[in-house]
Length: 260
Image 1 (tube, rainbow, N blue to C red):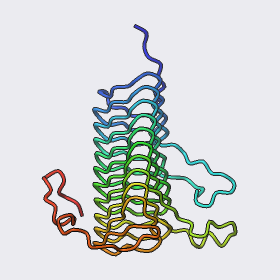
Image 2 (tube, rainbow, N blue to C red):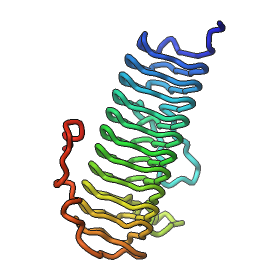
Image 3 (cartoon, helix red, strand yellow):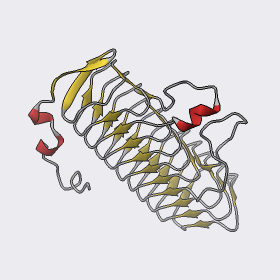
Image 4 (cartoon, one colour):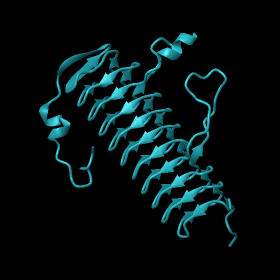
């Protein structure tokens, strides 16, 4: 049987029990822990650190260097630290995770999703199929970002936040053309336990308070108070979130417990 074609740089450290598909490219300085399973056509760029028991599906790219267009407003130049991927993570087919990102333990980045540079993602968070997390974001533990959601640069999602499919966020309130725009970039913040419904739009600088809920299809142009449900275009407070739905009223098992 013909040996599959692969390129593993001599300077890479790959645990002896790692399973490698065909046409895998592993660059210098990469470290891959025990028990990993790497699919066909995977590219792992220089210095990337992959923990133990990680699954990387076909054609995923890890440690990609960011591209910088001449007129970009938010992509910074300069050297980035290596991508690190925590134990037990799963990266789907065609997922792209940039150099300078950090994925916690058992994070799932689904098929076709993208995670940009200087993004930190906490343990057991799910990034859904085709979702995008732009640069300089902080994502907590046990967060769910569903299919096709867009998390703009400089955003913060705290622990146990839920972002429904096709949610859109923005960080430029003025859609600026002048240098003045650089003073006004600000992503969105969703505090602990906040939830955002399908197709909602969050405008720049918005904060969703703890346990705040945004109804499907809403356009949020002002902060959402803690424990309130908002809906509409523009969104307005309509009622309190039901007490049974509050995060601190939930009963977690041993796996789910343990958030800060």
